[in-house]
Length: 107
Image (cartoon, rainbow, N blue to C red; front, side, top):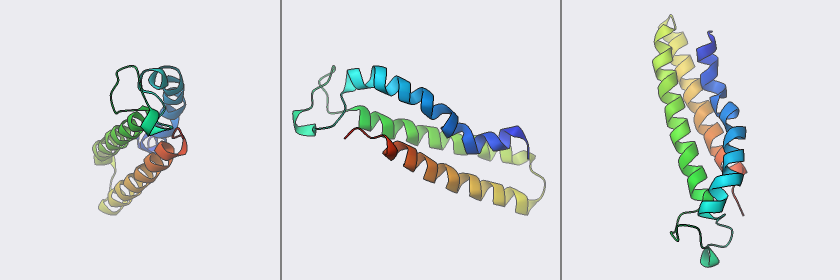
């Protein structure tokens, strides 16, 4: 398996620490934490907070990673190996995206 195939499994784990810094330093300031929605106000005075941004970010990241994996799968020889890679990559990224998005929600 080549590095680009492995990258589709670990890309979310590599990007998460960078996003967490951006989230706590910038996104939280502009959008608010979403801790108490009824009293929530943010810089833009809209009903969108850091939790919503986190869900949006991880949804987009998961979709992009899956698309990358599908493109990279063309290099894999053998139909069974390709199906095995695609299936495991999709399941891994969906579960990882869900767990990462919900693990650091502002409460």
